[in-house]
Length: 500
Ligand SMILES: [Fe+2]
Image: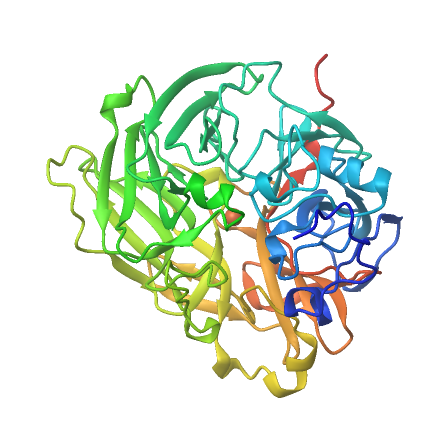
């Protein structure tokens, strides 16, 4: 194979589902002050919904490059005085900047530096989550430190290592916030480099000072995408997608599904733990998705709610024999594990199904994170709702799971309410916005980006959680935004300027 640098750059994206239809890369940077609003944005909403989508600036030289490998493009939707505005800018990562200089793709396969056209210091795309902490926006992907950005202008300040305090080469895309202490609780895996079993756990005070670091060794080098935090414990679910450095050196994939690996769940004291204090619980081989929340019950056991599938959700990274499930057969459910952190027997045999629908992207009222929660909001795929699949199939593109509705599960009554946005629509991850002046859990609004395959346009749908089944406002966006990953709501009151 000749080096990508001596090949001509591609002039269009590969003709693959992940680059077609609604998934055609957006690649737009813009500012639009007045969006069209149908319905009403309540006057008490004042803040910004930040979200990120993987959005390749240049056509990759990897033919079947997964959707996950695109450059992080940050959208900011600002809602104030009943009006909405939109702003979008790419994160200026090292990869983005160097590719722009030479006007072609330089990055190779997903998380395989041995396939790059040049040597990068930091090869992250910063495309997985965007959070606000201590006056900064942080664009995150789990393979590197964050990139810091300005919350007002979306200008990239640069790679951010917390003034040199970051002990790990990596930083999770799913840090947790304790609303009581203001702490940000984080970890990195493959924390000493590609293929290393090292996990680095750390807690950061609201002023950005590192409070504690614990180094752990995982039982297997595998993906730890999300995690969960209670008042006193940390929970690490390990996805049985395993990494082998020799495979990387040979130009192979970073990840390979391992059907013989159990679903490990690491449990570590949140404060003052030693490396030897971690317990690796085991459950049958399965694929853990995102967590909703975790907390401690009266007996001191950990209640951990997360999505779980018995199949390899990342079907594009098959097992060693090349086996992968047919995507339409993958079903992920909201499950509850009850784990006694003092247990001597580490085999878990029971998990409760909280909702049997095909679901993902669970969110709660974040004021109750680490504490018992009663309300859970999520994306749901329910074909019986009436989606016109034959009509939209040619426009869907591919490479990502489809969800056609937003759900609200009341964990006390176990009743579910569903919002169905339309027969030609799919939903992305929602965010919860508390109602101003209300401290009642789950009282507020849900905001989600919606793909409209009839208009081939993107919309924001805003729901009142007290009247969940219909939209309070539909906001039309001036550009089509492809499927994104995660985002967060930041109230304007919390967007204070950063201290020096
Ligand atoms: Fe995620």
